[in-house]
Image 1 (spheres, rainbow, N blue to C red):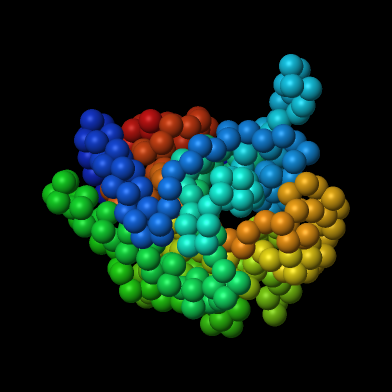
Image 2 (image 1 turned 45 degrees about the vertical axis):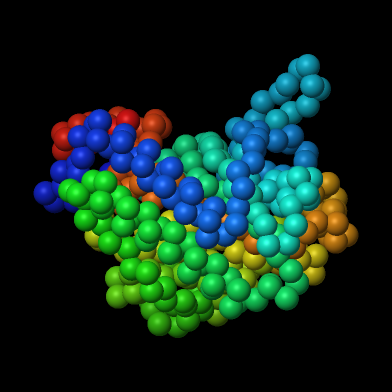
Length: 335
């Protein structure tokens, strides 16, 4: 069943050729702005990891990774869901020091994703990670980093408007911070996604904090793996999307678990079996640096800044027949 939404009167904002130019402009411009804002350097990263390494992102714990055997290496591999854990180990292996970080072009496959206007089985994002001190594991430091990322996005939007005068997307630089519990208290009768849209409509750039733990209702706002973000020091960057009339997530990020918070969250999530995996053992033994990091969706950012209604307009993936025919009938070109 297609979950396609075509807003009334929607027309693609650019021709096919100009769309490709704009995508390239956004990616190259934002990449440089992000590096300057957070002191990051590009590194090479894997498309797949060994199955038993514990490095793959388990997402909500039910999604199946794409897996395959490598006979000549005598190992089983998994295509990454994200590089949330791999990056932290890379900072140690590559010799990054406090205050410096890395980023990479991350490409992933999420085979069990429910595809719609915003979701695809193909994931492309800037994955970044930075070494921090124990004193920086605070909400104020998290918030200052969020503001720096928003400034990089806004600077990119401003440059795009000069290069492509027909595009008029505005990103609000002022960030509103709110916790998931505060959001539930404000809108107790709405679903998680409905709460986000209700709030972000009036606060068009919002950072929703503390995702993963159970709220007073007994349910978490959204799923978050227990072994990368500290659930008290993380969040999602949400902006208001005028084309779709809803809250729109651009980034998931946070200060990463310390040995103490990992120990606590593994138990809360019922994932104590992960303690024996190589990555988790190193972390629990304090052998990995303290870090913060996240992912910023490349196609999501292009959607928001260009003003497309479907992620397939800015990335190549596979879609069901109803989605393909619905887009074709509406004059929407899927790459």
